[in-house]
View 1 (cartoon, rainbow, N blue to C red):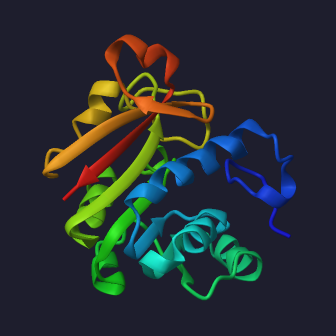
View 2: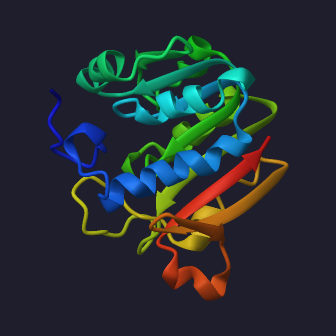
Length: 205
């Protein structure tokens, strides 16, 4: 059994009412509307989200690939969240050759990953290059004090401000921004920013 020693969500080790677990499930549920075809779950963790996608959208899917930087986590995902439409792979999200390895996708999800990545530009470039024309990215990150500033989490490089987050997606033809507080996800408006600590972007290439 993999240990829950950092921020990884491992449903088998958590109460079903755990707020963090409910938040993560809510993000995947939100993303289902945009998912079809070939799907990449980038930083998939133990695989519950990729499994949820496959079960919920199996008639609209060709395949789901879940990647994570931690080999033990991928091994756990293969053992615990098997689905015939899902493949789990040990990969680094900032590997510049990742698009060559994985190909392109109709939809990409990446939840609570951006704040862990020092090589932000390479990470975002990989996502853009792996997304097919007219494909959709659904990505989330917690808001904080801004790029390069301490955020109080030993696992985060930093936490972006709302303007910094919104400034990341100019290469996309259409972007919608949402905020999340617990399981509540709603359009991100400046007057409500203080009540919505997590940002979600839905980006169409």
